[in-house]
Image (cartoon, rainbow, N blue to C red):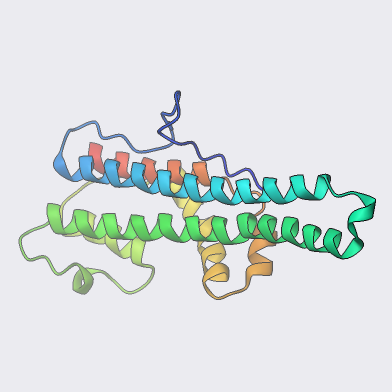
Length: 200
């Protein structure tokens, strides 16, 4: 079981400091903040639901008695393994995919909002990775002068091959390589990118 370190904003001390909070009050960044907080809540709840199922299965296995039969014990062991794999692979991969899809969507939306009227973002974006193309459009066509934070570059570098493995069904390799990923830090790295753009 992997501890994904996500925090709900609805807990008593729930103010996830890894999430973007706008400083300018600008409508674009208020919306990005709200959407990121909702995305965090969805990811947190999904992770917690699977952890809860794993705990239930582990409790049933712990309460197994010798007289209950070995077939039932094997089924309980399978349940524990299944829910553990679900949390470590499916939930982690899904959250990574959602985070970078959210980043692409938000960057494209910023290009459309901050750029000249009728900006053709997809046409202006150079070939290659989508996020880099959108950052190029923000700088070159929307005149937003910002520096990409090293934490975001690192998150991108680590996440890209993991996202590809997950998306193409190479889940065993994903599980091996994703074991140390801290999803809250990935949220934080994306937040740093939006802070840099907002403060430009």
